Image (cartoon, rainbow, N blue to C red; front, side):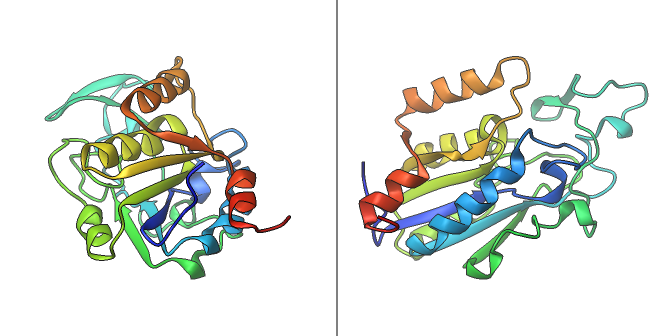
Length: 216
């Protein structure tokens, strides 16, 4: 396994209250990633924490489409879009990071999904696949060539971030046990298969810690 080096960044995706148990769009066992992220974050040169940050009138919310069912599909200007429960609304407790997540180590907090008419799964691009978040430029200016991904959810925001990072020329490792999935109609298996085929590597937190000599 490749050890995180001086060119490595940990990107922690959307570990927010609404994605954890009791939240509006809870990922099963989502809070379990928190202690694992806290363990490995100090081992990286750069740490980025992303945060969904939606306005209340966001077009991806089922409530904003008359008669639409939760998790149904609609067509947005950029193509098909899942209609989600309202979640991570700007300034609400649901949008806040999980209280046990150590965000004091963050070099950058990146907010995404704040444009009402386009969703944003990836840490690198909004769902139109064209509007950048600016993260790629930030990482390159910090000398980062290898991104390691953790957070929520494996099959949506983590998956999209991994695929975009590969497309942008970064090496990518998924810290698999520090992620949890939604698994909407088999989306988890499809996401893992797509990431593996694209060249994403897989690791676990104990492997990272052992390779660096932490906690032996």
